[in-house]
Image (tube, rainbow, N blue to C red; front, side, top):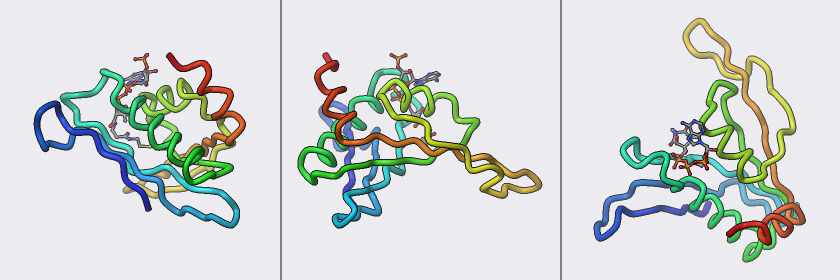
Length: 124
Ligand SMILES: CC(C)(COP(=O)(O)OP(=O)(O)OC[C@H]1O[C@@H](n2cnc3c(N)ncnc32)[C@H](O)[C@@H]1OP(=O)(O)O)[C@@H](O)C(=O)NCCC(=O)NCCS
C-alpha cells in the first residue's frame, strides 16, 4: 500500500489523502482508494493534483498497467473528478453495498498505462 498526503501550507495538518492499494506486481494492477479532501479545502484542485501524483507514481515508477477504483453511484463530485482526470467507466456493480434498508450501486472506473501516457501530454 502506498499513501499520498497533502498538507496545508506551512503546517503539518493533512488536508488531503489517497492510497494505492492491492498492488499486484505480477499483473501490473492496483486500486486507488481512501480518497479524501478536508471539507474546508474542497473545490481547489487538491484531489485532482494528488490523484495525478499517485497515478504518475503507479504508472511511471511502479510500471503498473492498470489502476482502478470504485465509487458509489450517487457520489457526483468524486465521479466528476475521476472523469475529468480521464478514468474510464467500466461498469456498475448493482446493489453492491447494504446500508440500513437500502442497497447502493458501486461504479468501477479504471485507467490504463497507455491512456495515462496520452493524458500526461495534455496536462498543463
Ligand atoms: C471527491 C473529493 C475528493 C474531491 O476533492 P476536491 O479537492 O474538492 O476536488 P478538486 O477541487 O480537485 O476537483 C477536481 C474536479 O472534480 C469535480 N468536482 C469536484 N467537486 C465537485 C462538486 N462538488 N461538484 C461537481 N464536480 C466536482 C470537478 O470536475 C473538478 O474540476 P473543476 O473544478 O475544474 O470543475 C472531495 O469532494 C471529497 O473528499 N469528498 C468526500 C470523500 C469522497 O467522496 N471520496 C471519494 C470516494 S470514492
